[in-house]
Image 1 (cartoon, rainbow, N blue to C red):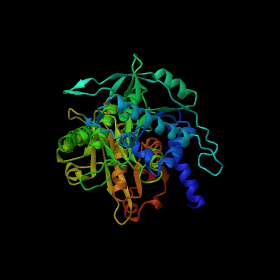
Image 2 (image 1 turned 180 degrees about the vertical axis):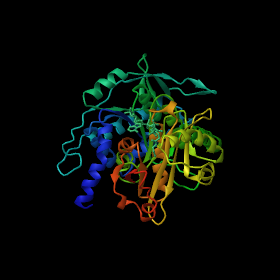
Image 3 (image 1 turned 30 degrees about the vertical axis):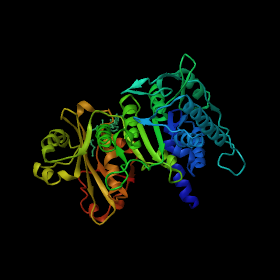
Image 4 (image 1 turned 120 degrees about the vertical axis):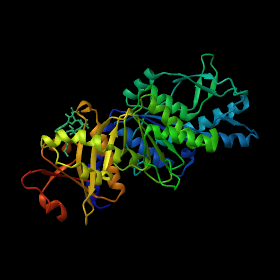
Length: 440
Ligand SMILES: CC(C)(COP(=O)(O)OP(=O)(O)OC[C@H]1O[C@@H](n2cnc3c(N)ncnc32)[C@H](O)[C@@H]1OP(=O)(O)O)[C@@H](O)C(=O)NCCC(=O)NCCS
């Protein structure tokens, strides 16, 4: 990376650094991620996030480590609904494996040799009896014995540690008021901790690289209804035992219970955590809390709703006039935000500008009764993602009265000469619109 690129990159990360400071992130590291060759890089990246002011709760799994210990002890176990049936002998192996994994993480977080990325980091790691557990008991005729579930999480104690600047490390073992230890599912610990702490994000770091579609392409973002559909599909095809199903289940549960964003990132590539959390394009799958509206491409049935929305704005001179016929022809350029009951809450259009790698954003409007709820901002994010996916590098917008809103969305004022030639020749001098652009 050249010095200029480096400076540019560093500046581009600053909005994320500011946004993440003081926010609580629950990061779930699977046992596979702990065995992975990128494990130390992941730990360095977590330490970096911590030193940038994020409050980190790190939850680790230990399934392959437990498997190894069981094999060495000549023990066999069974799973039901992804939970290991845990008898007393198995529990001893679980304690050893979880303890060993925990020490491995603590020692990685304690590194500080000069010339290492952890030099000067001084991460204070705190653990404890934060989880009260209870036995799962007998379910569908299976006695889970020492496998348990979470009864309560001591959020006040965790918050105290986070406020004091410590990183909280949680393992997948909880204790009952009778003093027994129970084997818990680490995703469940992470999900429940994220919910109880009202975390900004739950980040699930797994062996797989995000969630893929049928053609092995990464699904970059999923709405909550899409997660529910996928979860149902995975359960039908792979049953309870697919790890993708459990990831979806955790994400769904977290978002339904107040966590704004869940990120699924793999660890096969170096730096995925930083790319996902500190760049606009990310590199994993993002699942967002349901805002109870749906953002989707418009279809011909939306023309009436769009006209109702934009006609008053055209009459005030805020938007350029579009006839019904033009709207029908160009409907595929539009995205709409629709309330679950069907009301059209917002719209926006994206027009590629011929012979260039730029696009024009137009007709951005939110229903007046739904202003200031972030609808247009979310719609803009979707259009930007579409624009990026279709290879566009720059977005332009021409506006007469909404300059400040676009500025706050990261657009900067541009000269007429910066518009692609095709668009320059159509500029309406009478309207005197101001031109804004944003690099994607
Ligand atoms: C601009 C518009 C699309 C924003 O829709 P929205 O869904 O309310 O937007 P968001 O909720 O994402 O953002 C709201 C924020 O933008 C601010 N905002 C809204 N219109 C603004 C404007 N013209 N100038 C500056 N800020 C503006 C709001 O005050 C609010 O800020 P706050 O949260 O600090 O109070 C909406 O006001 C609208 O439909 N305006 C008329 C059409 C228009 O001007 N379109 C753009 C021409 S292409």
